[in-house]
Length: 231
Image 1 (cartoon, helix red, strand yellow):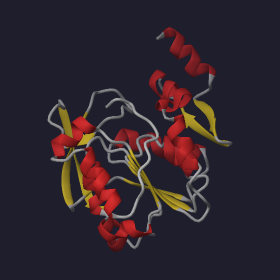
Image 2: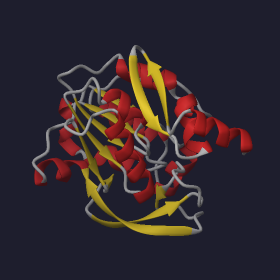
Image 3: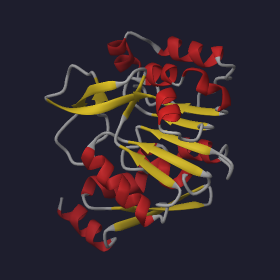
Image 4: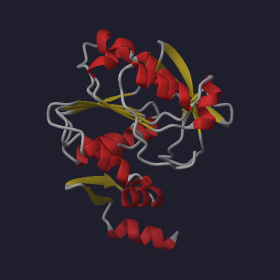
């Protein structure tokens, strides 16, 4: 911990990282946030795959944005981005990271959890660590939950008069199928969906990885596996 504190101080509260020629800066207020800024959560290859597919004509939706790792990279290339993060502390860090990268004019933050319906859901907190990833709607293992607004992607677009997405990144700890089906026919204009599959957590929602794959194929997507984190 002493070493981490020294390193946090050394980086003067922020850390810069670069993927595919795109540089992003992240706030480092703890050992955990410094580590994630340096390692990008082990997802550099995934970020790279997404950056290769985004242009300045795209509308990017980062669903399960956490502290903004994908938003801060992809938001620099996309025409406009919407970052969805219902957890308040993660959302606060997300806002700081967006500001550090001067993306306030092209990135909007939303406190809702996207799903297949509208209402209120219980967000299960994985642990008490600040800026922890892995929080989930409807997980039975959490010691603590908070109520968060829930909305379908289709309703978010139509009711809020938001631009139709063309690129989706989805990391929602088991709610992948619900998020996708919630977009309904709005998936028609999406050319790229990057979705992290959580097989064990998907079962809590009554689905499996095959359901997600079939849903995407039904909307004329081809499937490419770009990584496996054994989850």
